[in-house]
Image (cartoon, rainbow, N blue to C red; front, side, top):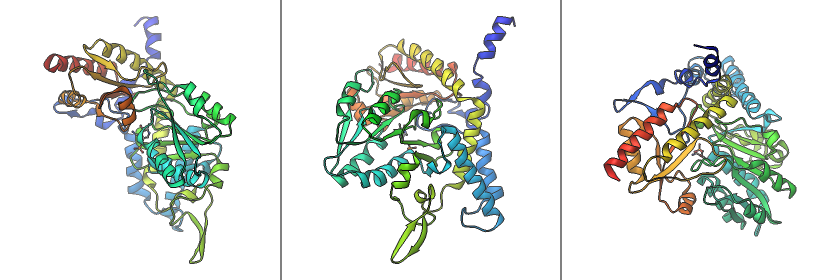
Length: 416
Ligand code: PMP
């Protein structure tokens, strides 16, 4: 190896080395090596995350916060250490601003039912964008129905970019909350959050960011972003299902009423009435997903070793490579061609149904998603019932994309 190629090798992202940490990626599917390209739906889990969850159950399983015995103390310590890891991961100011939820969906519902229900009245407005996941549409529709508020939607253009002229126009005197995704799961569009948040801030309107598709792919700093709420799911971040996070600014969370009632979220209970616990416990009624939170901490620690800056750069490289290769497949149309995109390749092919594409790829051991991706309004905008979607993670390689393109070419020859 000469010096120049050695130097360039040093800068290469070692995807294959990290991939070896993921037991499931070593298996074959339908007799073929697995090419897992459904990471926007959920990611695979590295061994340290699996070990962390197993270690919790084999060594310290007990209920937290209430116990006086050693196991309960250990479980509580591990659970709260995970909360601190999440805080550092998104650079929240205080640990009490990190609320554990079941995932993004629950986090957004929490804000809708606590903040929204308390603050919204007839004629008030909630502003979202035209590329939102159902999780960032339906909770707002529900709270609008309950309060008489109105849902406003800033539309997207033909590339799948939110129209900022419309966003500006719709951000009016009755807007009480803006709720937008960081990255669209159906299109890959990265929203211009800095601009959106600055505009909302200028009018004193709080902003919730749905970070489900962002946290595993780019560093997030909620203080620098200056959002008011940020929601994400562990399972898209190499952690287990059933654990997620709502970050909220302390001043807002302190003023919000609890949503779910039950154990742990109270300070005192009598039949005459109850008082609430401090943050973050006020929003964590009942026994939480203790093992999941601890394993989320392990995933964050693992991702820290991989390095999110390097992940972001590598996934951009893969995205460019994949976009160019897919563009050469006969009859293929990309859905979502925004200037700023994350590693999501959504497409349709003339004469082939998205579900058939998914099924054909599956026979080659290639896992993608076909459907509306819980973003029916996006499908409607582009005039398609469904798309095929390949979504990237740092353990994917050019070879995965080569196999995808090769299998698509085969499918086009066979069916189109
Ligand atoms: N928002 C976006 C942008 C998503 O991609 C998803 C998951 N597909 C969600 C919200 C919902 O996440 P969860 O199902 O983990 O609650």
